[in-house]
Length: 314
Image (cartoon, rainbow, N blue to C red; front, side, top):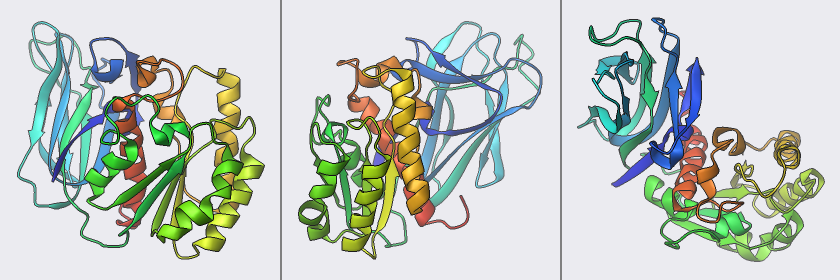
């Protein structure tokens, strides 16, 4: 088992939420609902695990949430505190049977009698991850540019997103990041670097070093499928960064998504969940995720990967 920290931006949200950027939250980021007495917000996380702990802010204006596990009410979390408290353990779910579980946090329309509002928040989770029972993926390869290489990572290779996925999935993951590489450069090494390892799954995070990656990526995906006809492929867009303008980033992200749509390949949107999080790329502060940022990439990849294990539950 591996105890993993899951940042707020890796969860799925529905209803009324605001992404709050503040130094008193993990990675300077948390999600908050509005403070109305309306059950209008929920968030979910899916994982193979034995426990999930919810950490969040408590405050005088905060309310309550119902905690559901696998669709059943598990208990109630009270977010009220007489003074603001940050990164507090709000609700622990422990001693779950090892296997697939869904956590859902639902805002309630009731609150502590001492509270003056109904806001709830999510900062991060801790989860004891276990190996998925199914054995569909026995070998995984991560390819990409300097983001996959981990140019801004202090503790390499342990904190690379590929290595974190290895912990989360209990599967061997081979990591091949080429700094400065555009899509065509990666495509040229598919045979030697990827196909030679005969993986069941290939993860390709790309688009940073191409102004317009779509055409090159379609060629690359065709080559990947030709060399590895039985392997699954999951693409991912770049995360938020300040090296390029917002307009440039949107073009890169949308063209990767378009290539995936044409070639019918799943695509993980790393950009939207991380939009505006300037701490994502500390200490460099431009384009390369930090150790913590790499963990977010891993968690977002993980949610897409386990869809292959649980169909059509997610």
